[in-house]
Length: 327
Image (cartoon, rainbow, N blue to C red):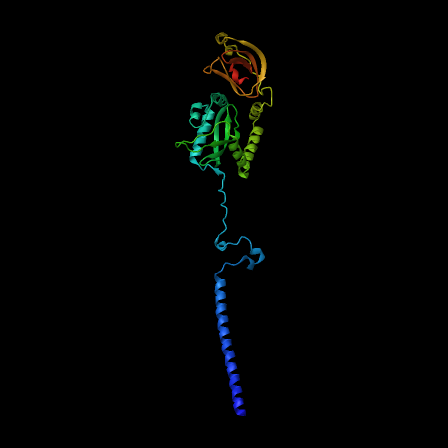
């Protein structure tokens, strides 16, 4: 009996052990399956913002890592180039030659607009210009496509003055139209002016202006005649540097032009010229040119006529000048 009870007790313990072992294996399998499912599920989910560090919870999108940052394209360089555009160089050389010769007909073919008043001024200035030498073009891109801003350096040879005067001008060359380029003549609009002003801040452009200014001062210091001309041109002196020439009776024009002109008005006064003018032997642009009166010089007005001419006396020479240049 005791042995039977002992055997039943052992069987009961074994049964319970087997039961507990079966339960443990099942649970382990379930745990493994759940763990695998959980890992796979998390791998396919988009990270929740609450699971990220505080500094990464803003502006998170699924493709954030794939979107490269856009970089701003650098502005194209607008370097100062010396004699690098053959067509521009030839155009500027023509411009300088036409200005020196007073060739307004040739100039009309390469500029955009030329008024009658500007034509007369060009012809008048050409009387004192012999040539433009050592012309060098420094270009930068203009405000519109295919246009150019040209800084032109040259040596201006003046009539009767041995030393040339270094100078620099700025020209606006427009884009091609019907395969033709033209130089803008006269004043420019505010937008283009602002563009040029910005370009002039370039250290290389400033160096050009400084070099021309330095050589211009040196030229005046080396030649008193050039210095005197510049002073007269700027109105810094009231009297001509040279002694007035005695008037020769043969150069005194006859009284006939006065009678033909009609409407003579006595002037008998002295003025300072605001522009350079030609003094001619008669009241006509075809008449012989006796001399040239420079801007800033003093000239005596004798009498004016209704035909647009005035009888004047300049450095002892009596002749006629266009009234519009004496006002």
